[in-house]
Amino acid sequence: MQNFRYLNNVTTLELDVEKCIGCGMCGIVCPHTVFKVKNPKARIVDQDACMECGACAANCPTAAISVTPGVGCAFYIIQTWIKRKDAVIECC
Amino acid sequence: MVLDTRGINVWCAAGKKTFSTEEVIRQVQRVGLDRVVSHRELILPQLGAPGVSAQAVKKDCGFKVTWGPIRARDLPAFLNNGRKAETEMRQLTFSIAERTVLIPVELSLIVKPSLIILLAVFILSGISPNIFSFSAAWFRGLNGAVAYLFGIVAGAVFVPILLPWLPMRQFYIKGILTGLVAGIFVTFSLGASVTRLESFILLLLTTAVSSYAAMNFTGATPFTSPSGVEKEMRQGIPIQIIAVVTVIIAWVAAPFVS
Image (cartoon, rainbow over all chains, first blue to last red; front, top):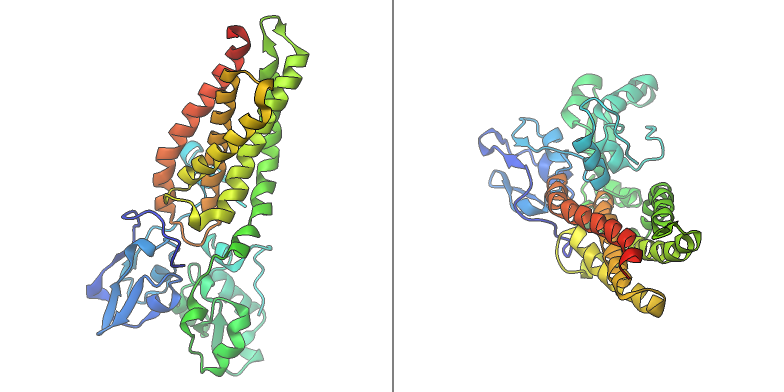
C-alpha cells in the first residue's frame, strides 16, 4: 500500500505508552504497519497510515489504544449528518 | 467453523459487528466446538480483528484466538511456518484488478438515484418561454443526460482505475479532475448542438457529478479513514452543492436568455 496515502493529521488514533505491556497484538492485527513493537513497548511509527479500523483497540489487552472507528463511506456519513440519532442508516 | 456474514466480506462485517466477538462465541457454543476438537485454538482471518477481541473470546468460551493471514490462500504456508505470518501475509494490496472489481457494485448503487435525477433533467430541460416544450425536454434533456452519465463514468469508473496516478489525496478533487476531462470531451462532442452557455453548464454538471461519485468511492477502499473522509466531505460537498444549484438555475434560464 505504499503508493496509497490519504489525508495527514486527521486520525483519532492514540496510544497510552504507560499502559502498554509490549504484547505485540497491535502490530499483528494492524493492516497498515502503523505500529512497531520493540524495546519493549509499542510505538506508533506511521500515524497517517491509520484508517481507524479499530483492530488494535479491540485487541489491546490493557486498553492502551483508543481510536474512533467509523464507516468511511461518504453516503453513510451524509446520512449520519441529516438523519435522527436513532434512525436506520442504509449501507451496502 | 462457519460464521454467517450475509455475503459481506469479513472486513466490512467486522466493522459493522456482524463478524464479532459475540458471534464467534455464539458459534463456538452452538456447535459445541469444545467437544468437537481437543485443542483450544481458533485461527481467525486478520481482517476480522476490528470486530473481535481476542481476550474476550478466550475469557467467554475458552478458545485462544490466533490471528491468521489476511488471505485464506496463505493459510497452508502460515500453518507450516508454525503460525508465523510473513510480512506479505499481513499486508494489504489495492491493485488495479482489486479496484476494478469494485466498480460494478458502486455503479449498481447509483442506478436508482440516477433514474430520478435523469427524470428531473428531462423535465427541467423542457421549461421554456412557451411554458413547456416537449421537444426541448427531449433534445436538451438528452444533452443533460449525456453530461450526467459521463460524470458518473468519470467518477465511479475512471477514478477507481486511475486512483494512484491521480494527483491530490482528496477523492472529491480526483473526481473534479476526471470530471473536467470528461466534461470537455462531452462539450466538444456535442459541438454546435448546444449553445456556448449550455456547454459551460454541462461541463460544470459533469465535473460536479464526477466529484461526488469519486468521493463515494472512499467507502470501498482499504486505506481511507472515516475522519479523513469526513474532513474532505466538509470541503467537497459545499462545492458540489454550489455547482449543482448553479447548473439547475442556469440550465432552466438558458432558453430564456439566448
